[in-house]
Length: 199
Image (cartoon, rainbow, N blue to C red):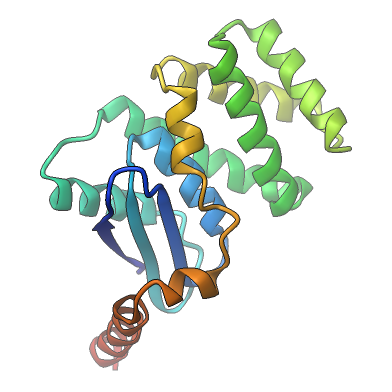
């Protein structure tokens, strides 16, 4: 029962994500998946009246972006973004969210930069990244990442666009909040509205 808010930002601003009462999907996971979906230069808030997983919120985010921008996102890109969220979340349950975020992010960057859909090349990238990050993966986990990356690479995403949109990932929630009182006030109003309809 999460709700999504999307505000378009100036070109080159990148993607900002803030969450409230979302337990399973991190802002990093959302941001990374949103670049796959084709979203750019946007401030996104995902909130709920009480703690929920947030696994289904991506649909609301893409709809909000399409409504705000008045443009349709590629359907394959949206489906692949949902797959990315699911795959990262599942991997996070097995190796830890922080590890899952890092490995999907870095493998995705290298696959896109190399522009490869070959399973053997993607597997080598995964093994290299896992080694760099000191993360142990099973054969099934590697296979799942390979399948995901093949779908992502088919979308023809530009590596420069990825870097541009993800530049805010290291910004803290405090910094994002300080960019405008309206964002924080929106969360408060949204939480109050949720509480009222759930009463």
